[in-house]
Image (cartoon, rainbow, N blue to C red; front, side, top):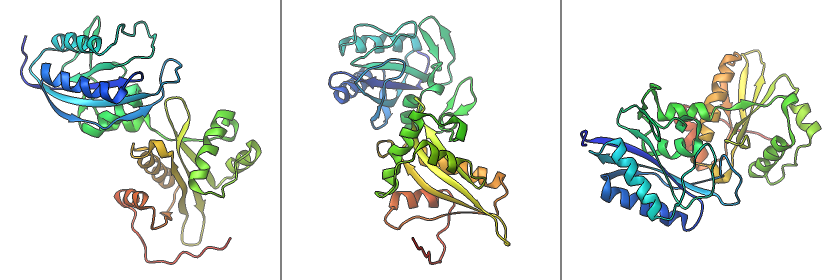
Length: 300
């Protein structure tokens, strides 16, 4: 049954075989059988969620203009999965490696709750591997039943967390130490004691943005400096894991630290950045930071 022209958003993933080729073929087949592809994200490499596997996923999101109903689309996408080598669907929360996975996310403003077909997808707001590529192609799309945009859901999922001295674990410390060399080649690894001493300071706060597994993918330090002209906040050591850049982690982190600095009464918020860090400098300008005509003097 035709229901009028609407936008369909889907999530695609593959972690076995020729992953990129499988996703590309799936998009082409959907365009032939469902409707014109109006947008397709780049590919995002992610760790498996819900099960252990040495095979990483490639994930993407795509949008199609279609007149088909949700049930018709579901039958077509399941048939495409079979033709591309998927022999079994994940059921009962049990997941496994797969050559292709196509999930229906949204179809216009339709809300559906039927066996095997729920729209919008009930888990999309909990999955970075869904929201990151979807936000690339449809950041302002409103998710039915939530009243929130895709970007708002992503920001909520990327919410930075402050590190407390009593909450430091070995995996957390390992994740922080993995980021440090990307800040400075001379950075020495932190020990549990040295990190705990840093976290106990009353003027220093370290924030991370964890991935779905709790591993830090971005980190920054917020320091407060009291002076006769008012409390100044400094954001320092901003770093995002190389493989996770251009996914919004840095923006989410700095936005959050600015809000925290204002909450703590800071009169100004400052940061320093080397000229050669072009991408970082573009991000800072887009967040409202202005480059000042000052000299920075440093003595080691």
